[in-house]
Image (cartoon, rainbow, N blue to C red; front, side, top):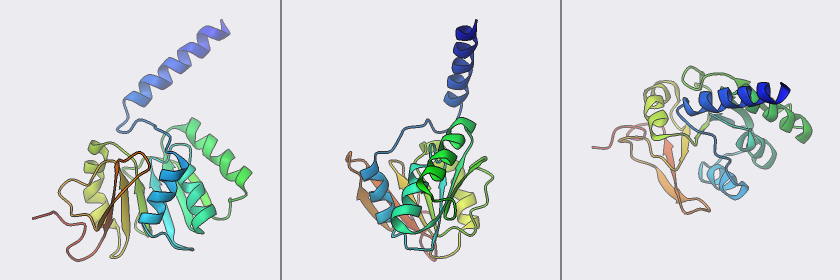
Amino acid sequence: MLGAIAGGVTLLWLVWNLSLDALWQPTDRVTVRRLLFLAEVRPGERVVDLGCGDGRIVVAAAREFGARATGVEIDPFRVLWGWIWILLAGLGARARIVCGNMYTYDVSDADVVVLFLSATANFRLQERLRGQLKSGARIVSYYHPMWGWRPDAVGEAKDGYPVYVYRMGEGVGQDAR
């Protein structure tokens, strides 16, 4: 009986995750560092990882780059895992994960926003990011570009996939013409 319940819960969790705009894919540590390096994260800056999964980018931003990092994740199991990771790493003063919706989370005080999402999710976030982020804020997107925007820089991750960096301001974070 317990096995059937666990199987049912697992099936529901999988179906629910497949309905989201971004499937969880763990990012390797080298790529995490590369994303944060390309975004030029500096100590004390505010980093927000939308759809943070288990929080590995949040932990690296706080531990290795000295940032104040927040992850936003809708899956409560991953949020719990991220909380445990942050607690065990002793980063509670500089890192946190909130259970929330990346489409409604306020990023207006972010210096860097990290995205490893689907092309659809990036597209859906563009207007919100453009409207909320201050001039000079950076968006770093792994794998998928921001539709129609000119990147400030394009790097490469360990696996050879592109990393796009956008800096908000005049002529940047705007549609390519």
